[in-house]
Length: 171
Length: 113
Image (cartoon, rainbow over all chains, first blue to last red; front, side, top):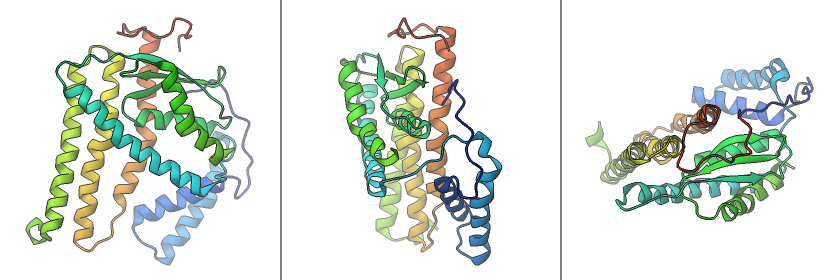
């Protein structure tokens, strides 16, 4: 996602980015497909060293405050991906369909850049909506909807379904 | 190899491959049918979600049916989820910058990226 604003430099401590450290270690172990002691050590090393090396590129650290809500969010997104795939498939395959595209402004209540990026990604990954501009100054995401008659209803739906949960998870 | 698997596994794997193939095809048809750039931009996100998702599920089922516990497919899903929105966003930014004609024109007060 593009932004014209530089985040404040992140702190350079061993565990300034705990979520990133855990993610890196988990990805390493998944790549190796093994829980051998040597791989566990390598994973721990990557998780500790890499965030320290790239700390200048990182925004403020991410804290997942509610793990249960994060799981709920993941399940909700997967479900919505399946449903909207079927909706868009019907739109593509029915011969007489005349989709009515629209631009939707989704105002952001989220403050955390990582949370904004995640919301924009989820909007794009659910078929039928693509995040075109993530504007941190205007605090909104400009979304292109494939078939939308009521832009305000769609913006409300995104705020109620996704943003509300993300606010609980990150802020 | 495939014949040695349980019948239920064969059915499930084949079904997943067909589902993935159908949704990838729908994405391609969308690319052909939709009249403007921004609408065609929606097709790849379809192909990468259930299209690739179905194939990855089939791949996981093959591993599990053979008694292996492979999770590489989860990583592919994660990498797709991280990269696809970024490329879609950059394509959209380029189109907005070039003022590509569209069925629904972008908001007039939107600054040119």
